Image (cartoon, rainbow, N blue to C red):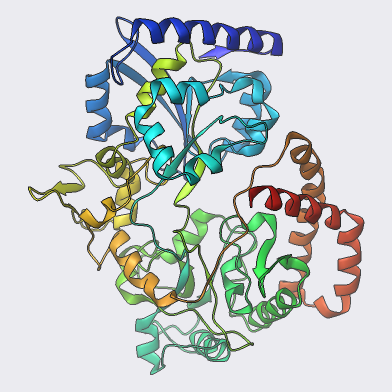
Length: 522
């Protein structure tokens, strides 16, 4: 790891990188994906992991075999999402960078654009050192489009995930509680409200205590999923406040549908249906309730699948079709091409790297079919079984572990470089009763109800700077207002003043910037 605290040093290092890279390419001509220099090469590779996941993924047998095959040793730096934002700010301010960064949640667009001198443009390296990725760009042009920054250069690599569903979180309900109370699966907002009220008032979990049930709980301020019945769908990035309503992209926190949704949440809060700790609890506290030791405690939620977070109580839950809202229609978070299937910033090479050509060649190994599925689920022989007919099946997870948790433990999962060629997913046979196979199966419940999100755009340096100021005020204010209205009410009386205040904070300019970026993307 190299410390570059002055931009002059960074520029000098960048120039040296180009010289070294050229020499390496000439010396290593004709060798595919092997280290260009003699002897052992070591790279530091940084990636962010959710919560306390740690670095168990580094034991993936494919990664071990890659090191043996290429002679490149990797020093992994796995950081936790819990305190990464603070660590990241310190790292970028001081210029203390690893050689390679993996995962689009590690450094985002703003991090890259505001510190562009720390990241190596990859266009020439892709052309000369990455035959697998170059072929992927030709096969799926969207991979190149999504990674092209406003200056026309590519500073990051994209991913294309296998076997992706078109819907993200879906409504999950405790079917055992419904059966205990003789209730049907709710299909409309009114039916859902009645069911949640029964969960609150009666001994739904059947343990003799009518007061330990939590009909609905959420964390991290609020769950946007709960507003799905009102047509609020912003799965790609809820923090941007934009979704499509009636075929038009709008700032949904000023839309009448949002106001109606918040009034409904306030009704649930007043009746004690919403967990009163929802606005203050962290994920650890919430998961403690979802996985309570002696009895299931949560009645309704939105999750990737019914076996994702409820631990030993998972069998009590089922995914149900999207709830129809006041307009009689049902909506779902999603994306017709597959949720989070194609994304940028999955791998970056920093100017701290002394051998970017070798780093690019190492990363190119990830852009093969078998490499990608092993870095998405786990290694062949551990998580995946390969059959003589060229098909693959996923093995069952260890007892007491959900399939999704097992995949995250065994692989880079959603993060990092990946590419499966068109049609390859057909050779992957997933169990429809668990994990990603289950997700693909239950996603069918949302067919025809998915609204595509605001696209994944890249802003210019000037836009990024201006947005940082605008969003700091706008989203702090909307979050404070939302928490107040859900817990105390009063949204109708304060609505006009709220809209006026957002305009004073620059909401119109915010939307102008977002729509300009959208126009460039299209």
